[in-house]
Length: 233
Image 1: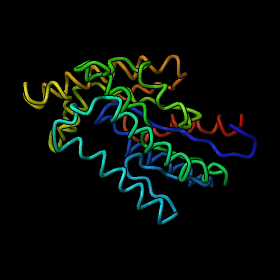
Image 2: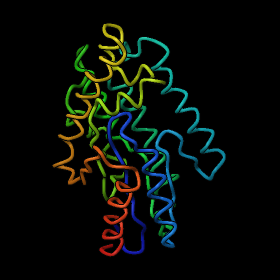
Image 3: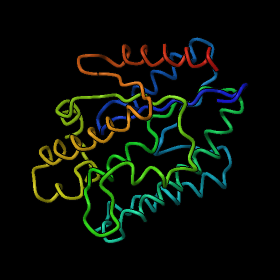
Image 4: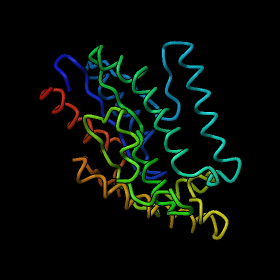
């Protein structure tokens, strides 16, 4: 974090961990304290430049094609590089300008959950990935947050939240067609959680245990750490 720059923090966690609601609460609390904040929804980032916004929308549409067919035929490297391209653009055109203005950037996710989800899919064909360390180098040009907060949520709790409107991508490539949705979700997201935890130690993430805690309490813990980062910056 360069002198004069803002702070970039990202929330990670399995599907249903509460990242979006917590990120919004964190942003609101920081604003109440007089801080300039840019809230970034990782899958709906809004660049200020109209051309970039249109281009980014095209990248999102390309990613969504994975929900409309046997995407695994194209191989993990293809999908990983598309997603790396997406985050590189959000970094350059949304995150970096906000940091240069001295803002706190709060993202409700970054690329780490995607990495964990790909790894949890397991090797299906030669060239596919089953470990985060195989995937992370492909995101080398993308900015790492100053701090990642892993919202470590029990999978059963997340399943109860997500079952009403679960999407196929949350069930895993191997489980979605062989189990009930709830069983598939628990199996796949348990593997995703394991990969996220495996990245937490080397990444020096702040792991936040969310069981039996409300959004306000979790956001307060995150904000306290953000204040420390700001003072140290």
